[in-house]
Amino acid sequence: MKLLLTIIIFVSISFASEVTPFKAQNNYIMDYSKTTKCLVRNFDIYKHPKWAVKITLKNGKKLFFSSPKSMFEFYHRPGKWFDIGVKSEKDFKDIIVTDYQTMKLIDAKKAFYIYGSRVTSIAGDDLVAIENENDAKEFAKNNNGKRVFKFDQVSDALIRLINGRI
Image (cartoon, rainbow, N blue to C red):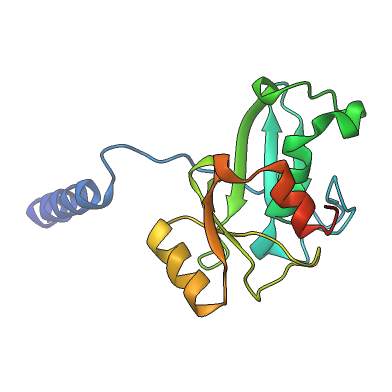
């Protein structure tokens, strides 16, 4: 009996070490409720989880957005929502987006954003967030996407263009 128990424990430990990554990734949480609204558009976040975005501020406050476009709208012009108290990018702790294809929560600054695809959010024309550049290019190809951007390439002018405010 002791031998069997020893073998089971040894196999369990061996298996666990194989699947445990050497360097753990951030475990992001999209902790909205049914009453959580998009800061920019006042849409219910829970109804469209493929598009959900969250910014956590250094003071602990959590801001939710109905899509990457809405998040970038806030990101580029936080003063428009002066009551939030964000003065600069230094006030942001984390920005996470939902990978549209996998529903995985990812660091927004490492994601790729597809512009001009036929896939639209509740906010209309939008930027589809995808974690991997090759997957983003494939998504763009399959969905009539015009261009793939990195986070720092998404300008305020692009967001105004998507919103029809040029």
